[in-house]
Image (cartoon, rainbow, N blue to C red; front, top):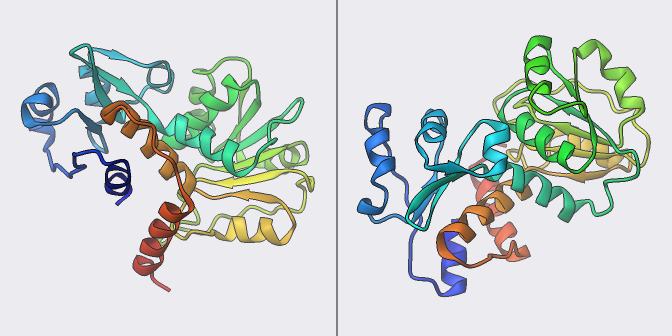
Length: 261
């Protein structure tokens, strides 16, 4: 829906299609994308590690995060990138301008793929990042990838960390439809803190609803989805798409129609 919208409105002849490829066939498929008629594509689970290994070169984000989810051609070579890093920060910049205050501190919940993207791009912006995860060893492993600005903690440290946070980010699946609730109290957050949830189904999670009621600026995950899609589109079709209010509404309506009430 997203890429089809941009292709139509920019007048570009092309298509964005789904290919169901088994792990056994993936290497051959990816290395012969052009022969299949493709200028690039997105890579989803379980193929991201294989894509990381197979591409001719990687952009800085993919190298740092250790995952490739977008591929395109440059001068005949297959390049791998990570659009989640772009989507995460572009959405935050768009929805909460001025969030990066002096001495900015971010508390990031989780240590999976979304947390990797958040930790990398926030630290690149000079933010002090505190990763909080139930399994501390995973947070420690992730923090070690990104240098001295990124720190690892267990959930027992959350209350202390929230008091100094300028940005709280949920990078777990908790709060998503069909997943457990996210149990995080916001009473310790300063009023100026921004609350960001990468979940977009539902469109407003319990975390964001609670934050909005308390007067915090909030950032939902739908914008991250739209912004990361724009990253790939630009690489494939040579045009920079715009995340318009009309496009966002189309996707919101589709999510509402498919989300159990």
